[in-house]
Structures are given as structure tokens and as C-alpha cells.
Length: 346
Image 1 (cartoon, one colour):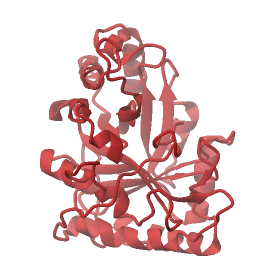
Image 2 (spheres, helix red, strand yellow; image 1 turned 90 degrees about the vertical axis):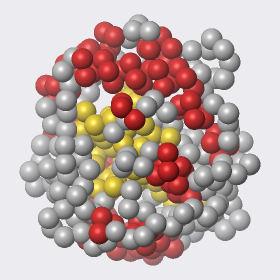
Image 3 (tube, helix red, strand yellow; image 1 turned 45 degrees about the vertical axis):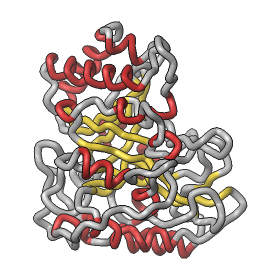
């Protein structure tokens, strides 16, 4: 499991500088969702927003158990169960399959896969990991149910902008295209593809950033992994809007506005999000949680949000849990209970 990375001199969380994004008119897709909200063949809800979770990050607790504990604390079953894999790991796992076979708690998988683990993006694009892809294709077809697949989430932080490195931005796009087309050629029809960015202001300002996008024909959803601080004056302090609307250094569109402008027909998933304070600097997170629904109403392209929950990030100094204070947990439970997240998986 990997949490979104920030600049090395700070931490492993992501976000981008505060900016003002275009405000879109509210739509029925982001207001109180009736019971009739259902997902289509690409898992896009007809109304409302899919609610997801990843829990137990950077701990030894099994992720299925951690998610169930998180669901109990928050008061709502996660429609999306977020998991992380790399290389030749066999997945979906037995635990993942069991979690999505629970009729009392319907869930769909959101699987991150670092397919180039032990190799490189360029080598995958050249077909050197076709055996790995084909093995996954067989497992995916056997699983049968629709699920989300993210290939190498947060690629910006892995780019090596040196010719021939195998990890240039164009290599990521080529790797992504090759993998999805290979899966399709193997008869895989139940994978819904997501390209998930960090959306950090540093990376969005790079000349190669646009080269990461694999193409609308192989991308079903556009994802964002982004976090916000609740410590005033600390890195990326703000509310839910700030992790969507921050702009690249030097100016330009914030992530949400970029996505709806450049890829207006693609649904957006906030594939990782959370509010953090430094360990030992406990600060109430209620203001962030209280801002979520009003911001979703302004952004009808957002069709899913997936909270990443952990007491310590991969640097050991950020608390992204929902229950670091009683007020934080109460606010999060109120958020989770909002009918906007009442979506039936089709």
C-alpha cells in the first residue's frame, strides 16, 4: 500500500497550491441522492457519489479487517474497497473477493497495481511483462465482477525525466496503453480503468506533466490522490476545496478544472483523500469534513471519493485518521450519513 507522496523535504502526502477553480452549477448528481441511484457498466453512478475507503495503511492489520473497523466507526459501508498490489502478486485475493461477496455490505474493488515493479514502464510498453499481464487477465476474468484498476497511481513522483531512463512521462503513457489494450485483447471486460494523479503543484508545472495522460480511449475515470492539513500555517492547510482546486506553480488550471476542461466526458474519482495533522499536534478535522458535501455540489464531475485512513503515514509523522478527536469523528459520521453517498452498485 502506498500513500500519495509530497516533496521529499516535507512528507508523503499530496496536494497542490491554493487557487480558485471554476464553480460549476449544482446538478442532481451531486445533491441528495435518492435510493434509485445506481452504477452503470463503467461503475459511474446515475446520481450521487460513490463512497470508498482504504484503512490500516502502514500497519500490520489485514486491510479487510481494518476497513470493517473503519466502516463501523464511520457508520457507512464503503462502496469501494481500496487495495494496493505490485508486480506478480496474485490478486484479487481471497480476502478481497470475500469482501465483495458480502450481500449484506455491497462493495466493489478499487485495485492499484504497480505493474512495472522490478522492471520499468518502457519495458512493460515493449511487451516484456506480457506474461504478468496475461496472468492478471486470467484472474480478472475468473473474478467476473466489475472493478476499478489503477495502474501505477501517482506516476508523477516516479518520473525520471532523462532520455532512456525507462521512466519518462511518455513511458508511463505507453505502459498504460499497452497494458489496457493487452487486457482487452485477452477478453477482459470487467476492468474499469483509472489514471490516478498526485496533482501536486510542483509536478503539474513540469513540462512533461501532460505527457503522462495515456489517452481517452484507454481511460475510463480520472483520479486524484490529494490531502489537506488542518494545522493552520502548516503545509497545504485548507478544506476539501483546496485539495481539488490548487494550481500548479507558475499558474494554470487547478486539477478539477483541468480534468473537466481537457477531458470533459470523464468522471472524476478522488481516489485518496484525507485531512491530517502532525502526530502529537492533534487538531480538529471537523471543518474539512463539514466542507465536503457543499464542494461536491459545485463539482458534478466527481462521482467517487475514497478516504485513506491511518494513524501514521509512511513517514510516521502524519495522522490521517477520522477519529483523532471526538469532534472529528462526529463530523465524519455526519458526512458519511449524507444521502449523497447512497448509491447502489449495479
